[in-house]
Amino acid sequence: MPDLGDIDLRRSALATSGSRLRLDTLVRLRWLAMVGQVGAIAVVAWWLAYPMEFEACLTVIAVSVALNLGLRFSFPVSYRLSDGAATALLAYDILQLAALLYLTGGLQNPFSMLVLAPVMISAASLPPRRTFGLGVLAIAASTVLLFAYHPLPWATGEELHFPLTYRSGIWCAILLGLAFIGVYAWRVTEEARQLAYALAATELVLAREQHLSQLDGLAAAAAHELGTPLATIALVAKELDRIGPKEGPIAEDIALLLEQVARCRGILGKLTSLGEEEGPLGTMRLSHLIEEIAGPQRPFDLAIDVETRGAGPEPVCRRNPGLLYGLGNLVENAVDFARDRVRITARWDDDAVAVTIRDDGPGFASDVLGRLGEPYVTTRGGARAAEENSGGMGLGLFIAKTLLERSGATLSMRNALVPETGAMVTVTWPRLAFERGLVAEPPAEPAFPL
Image (cartoon, rainbow, N blue to C red; front, side, top):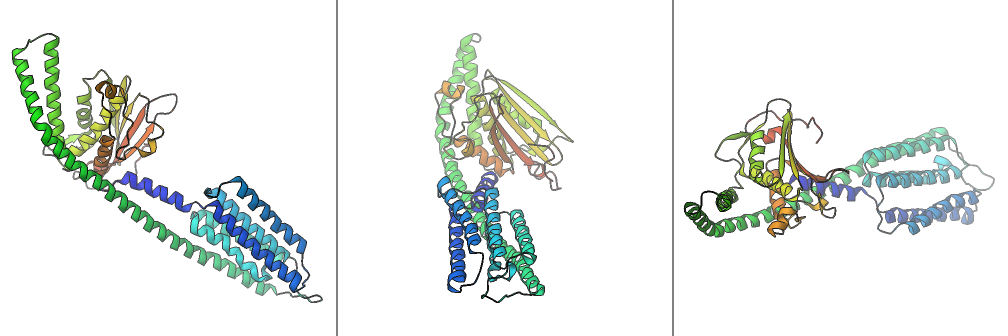
């Protein structure tokens, strides 16, 4: 299964970067428009010598010059506008052009079709609802210009006046142009975005599968190399247990040694079966799953609280080594970073299953919070890690995240809200994915907030 969490993040990033206009783009386009406006006014007023509102037109253009200069000196060239700011600037361009058309004949002016330009820019780069708003503004401005305008500049002593029917035709042409060209530009741009999303998703999945394939080989090699020394340790531990004292601190240490050897054997067994979708031992309830991942962490001097609640029958899943390893790794990380307590909460309803793992430690470092789950990104440094003198490589969380998402889950990682401290990881499955092979009806959206 593709890494749905990272694909959604990448898709969101692409959508954000793809839809946000650079300020420099709008500034340059406005300079180009103003050059054309000044040129048209100069030709009409000086070369054709037609009487017109020359000073008023220059004043309208001067306002745009001042705005462009202010934007240029206030923001860097690479600054990207929010959707709201881009919409406001494009709305200004519509109103500025409407003011010039008002002074130069309204819809009788052959340049009235340029009111389409800001809407086309919006259709190619902004959400449809903002483009619709700009289209409504352009139609409103055109409607006003249909009835209110200064005379069209024409030869001295002559007056050119088009009938209302002709001006209404221009208005209809603008309306149809906004609708057709706007939808066309949006569709073409949306297809390009969808292709970019698909390419990004494919690249991400291939990269992550390559990482995981490399780690599969590393895990197999580690299991093979560690098998012999672990067997030797187990043999020595059993011999010490046989000849050593049956009570006292030494006996307790030997018992602990035997317990940890058994645990290491279990981990090595998991490494050889992480790719299996289902284990051979049948099914297990959600509460049993939680207890199985929390049990190995209970010997440490830390409270682990487990809470299970939900609506309807308790979910049942297949015994999946990858699922057990992924959740177990998250619990182990929480125990490593916690000060006094780890809380595991399992919730379910008819549509979704969620497991939240929370500790009371320092939380995720802010500089890596957005990249958690990527290989070689780690915030390792909890109490147990310091005690064991082991600095993590960030591969455990990467493997856990990938295995859980292969089971159909999505992961959400964040810090607790002030004044509380600690990290929170929420793993959520559609109930159909969690009970894969046990139910037949497709799930709806989760009914409870995650």
